[in-house]
Length: 115
Image 1 (tube, helix red, strand yellow):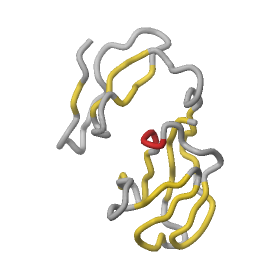
Image 2: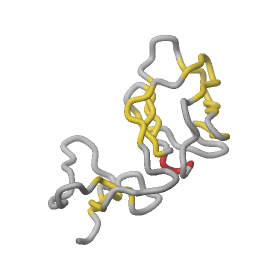
Image 3: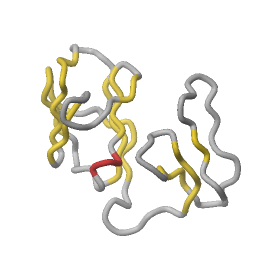
Image 4: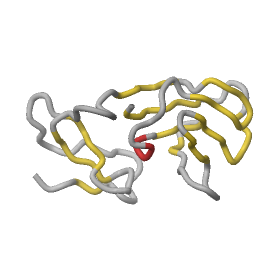
């Protein structure tokens, strides 16, 4: 089944049609919106953290586990997907997140990732 590219779309996004029993949505490129159905992974990175609230304050936070692969981390601040990398929204070293800006106390801040 070909991948479904969600690039540029915002409200009203739908999941790709299809997906057999037991399949999961999987990122198929570096674009966060390019996903398709696939069998669940096994081995390193086979587990998934859903809606984890990173521990910390200000600009420094820690996840319960190190994302594996690191690119699997989807970090949302005030409902907006943050971008990983030097000069972007945050950097990641193991399970430690350093934000480019201060996260306000009480701001919605959640992470989804494989480990």
